[in-house]
Image (cartoon, rainbow, N blue to C red; front, top):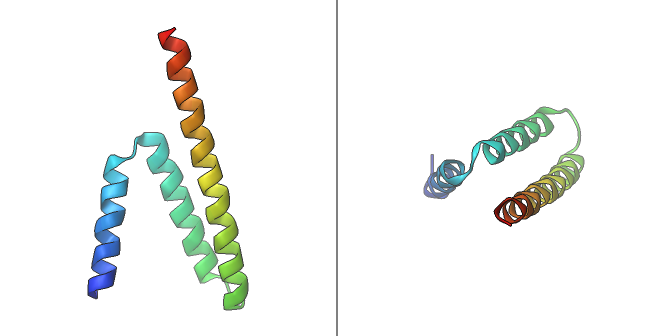
Length: 78
């Protein structure tokens, strides 16, 4: 493992440790989907396109969840 890979691994560990259970499940699903894309026998250009689309979708889902969580906390406090 080179230095850049080591830094990426450390960052991934920090993110996973700071995430709650739902966020960890979402991260795990995203990572597994990326590995599935990587293993497919399609051109690299198509893999890149699918990975970008998946990541954009995953970010939208996580943002929606965080917004929902904040709203539900606000409503339960009121």
